[in-house]
Length: 252
Ligand SMILES: NC(=O)c1ccc[n+]([C@@H]2O[C@H](COP(=O)([O-])OP(=O)(O)OC[C@H]3O[C@@H](n4cnc5c(N)ncnc54)[C@H](O)[C@@H]3O)[C@@H](O)[C@H]2O)c1
Image 1 (cartoon, rainbow, N blue to C red):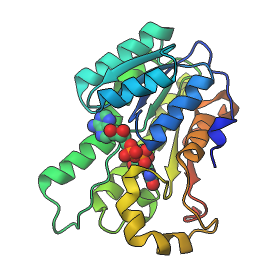
Image 2 (cartoon, protein in one colour; image 1 turned 135 degrees about the horizontal axis):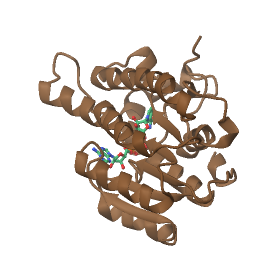
Image 3 (spheres, protein in one colour; image 1 turned 180 degrees about the horizontal axis):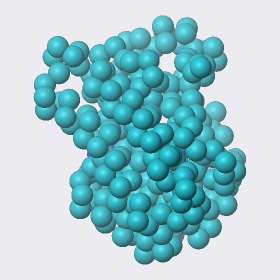
Image 4 (cartoon, helix red, strand yellow; image 1 turned 45 degrees about the vertical axis):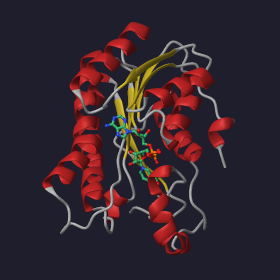
């Protein structure tokens, strides 16, 4: 299933910053935004993967900012490129994240802090840097996880960071709404990307048994939901968390 290959929005003349742009979900978000006319500013740790994606997109309306999305110099460069492209930051999708495996007892301070730095602090710092450049109609879509609602065995650091992303998203919706800026989250379940390879081989069967649609999701299915939230089709939606999980977790 890849709805993002036949869904289109109109983002002509608008800039979009996407972090984690060459990952499984990030690359699908990029393809859909680009096919819908946006100018993309792509951030990821892997320059070669970004170059390959830029080649695939034909090098038009694409600017690459290789680097750590939680580092202030990378953030400043990405914001400057978006502002150069359209005069503002129109769309912001901080997709980058890491999902190491560790019990709480075995989690070092360094690992705990690294997960929070990339999954939560980097999202906060990037959004804060964009605030002066948002305009009415700008939209932020953050990437939470079912783990942020339910907790996660062997991934407490990750679950805590994603719960933080959900609370940050709702708080920002309050703060930025009066300026006409919407802030929403997508919250994926188990999606077929490199991130969850180990999880799927260890506990895939039991997770699938708990999933009403009885399969894992595809990156394009998350991208379609995220880009919908970024689009004017979602113009009265803010502070929302949209679950993309096949029914694995149904929020009240
Ligand atoms: N795949 C899933 O099942 C799943 C489930 C819930 C939530 N999510 C979330 O969706 C997002 C995308 O996940 P994915 O499945 O595409 O993972 P992925 O591992 O395929 O992609 C993650 C990307 O982020 C990049 N990245 C990591 N740290 C970075 C940093 N410091 N700076 C810049 N780039 C960095 C990686 O290089 C990679 O390209 C993540 O936030 C993840 O937590 C994924």
